[in-house]
Image (cartoon, rainbow, N blue to C red; front, side):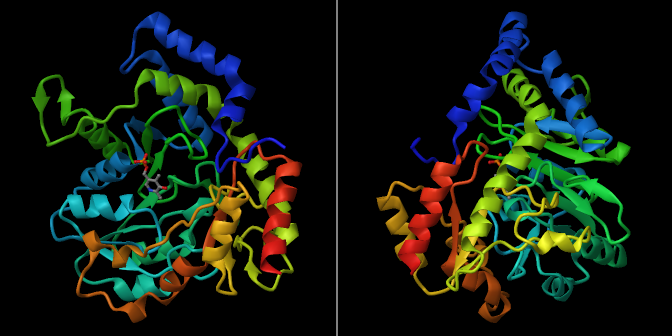
Length: 387
Ligand SMILES: *Cc1c(COP(=O)(O)O)cnc(C)c1O
């Protein structure tokens, strides 16, 4: 059996080596390392794929969030609501910009921002909501947009984990994740669903004025060379990374399918296990989306995350490592409990779901190259251990 990896970037590279190498060689031949033609070409390809007017590439997904918030003109003291159960980058940039992060609990089934908790957290100072499409599933955007419209709030989608996912609205219309709010952001970190071979990120918007503002911010606040109209940053996607991404973007849909196939295998194996809760997929599209193997385009399985309900999560984690099955706890600590983000306004009673998830979740190997032999070994090892 091929050694199991949490994310198998090497096997994936071997499948696309020729295209990627040719694309990188193009950059080397041109010496246009920064803002070369491939950056523009990838930008255009991604705009077409996402059906969004503007993609602004930048250096990483954390910068993308920061720049989006700067572009919207958020000011010190403005409250920004986001989920308690996610990677720290989201709350980090809110705090760095001296905005006030307001963390709210998530839904027990999808792990995405809880709509009732979100409503309760709104105050006259609230200016923006940052739904995170966690583990590859789009948050309840019908409800988020409704609340944002009612309270005149910006919506910034943190789409670092769900690029390629489709969201179906209640009325049946569809949009790509990251193109639904005022602005969306993503990361091209190597292990993300569309990863480059270094750092990279991008910002998406259909708003022409905001796109213009953001294009200046990523380039030191310059709209005309050496005229600095606003305080900006230096955040670029380099041409070598754009070359990798341009070569990989045409594969993204098949990569999403490969991930869903692996998820389907896992779901079938674990569906009736009394100690395991498999991921819940919620969609307006079709009732089929709740069954274990139908293709639900609202979930692209950045992570495949189980809940272990018999209290043996930590033992399982160690047992799998001993069996050479990589696995991870995303996330072991609620953001509201992190030293850097403590706030006396938070009450433990307000985070029952996150406080429980941090003790039960475990993420299994998930990537585009998992084979049946590996999946069988992983699922059998887990089921035998929990029996
Ligand atoms: C990865 C990630 C980020 C940050 O992206 P970087 O490119 O590593 O800066 C932000 N938010 C979420 C939800 C992520 O998963």
